[in-house]
Picture 1 (cartoon, rainbow, N blue to C red):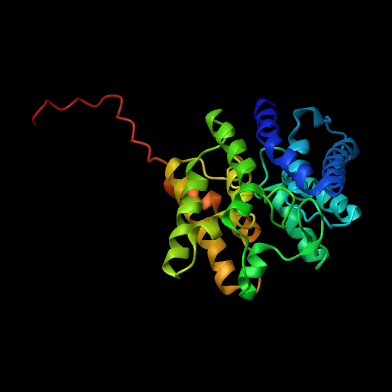
Picture 2 (picture 1 turned 90 degrees about the vertical axis):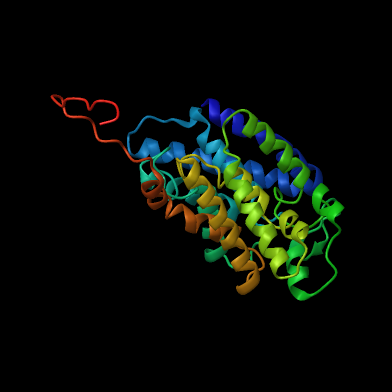
Length: 295
């Protein structure tokens, strides 16, 4: 529960920025997402006659992260369906908290993208809520992209929790200082994103500050349940996520690939853990005579 409380506090700046920029649509999305996540967890546990554990706040965190990953124009009933899917399929079917293979919030987001195609559009501009394309969509089309200042502060269209880089950085720094998130994963991801952008002659800062890279790298890829246990594994995980994101941005018809990259790498975390785990030294035989120094 301590970690869940820390996550909620870390997400407070992001949530406040989402409410400031996207107003009532963001408020209703977050309320519905959190309520649906908590209700679906309680109903599932009740139906299976298991102890109801919503007080551990894990469902609240999943619902909040899921809501922050959504477009402000998404119909509320789809948000409720996606949050319920995140809890039931992404978490409970794996055995509950701490046993899931995939990040539940991202799995819920992937579900609505596939099951309800087109409902994440149109994207809305902050404050005035006018229909617009995201910076990555504009960049893909060859148009004039937003300034770095707008990208940093959040004055760009996008998912309600991804637009303000400032809020994301503040929240993650606090979470990392509290030792509830490992900095190696996002640093590895961002380093690869910046390096690949430079290689192809594009602005690395634009790629770092746009899209859902930071929301995903800071708060979803660092999920201790679905990320590697070793420091080496975390570097590998972060580097591969960054490479996956840029592969999607460069070569896929989609302008963004954070969801696909993180979920894809979640699937290989057991393999990463296996090959990066420290090798155990064989125990000496009970009756073995120790060798003399220099022998």
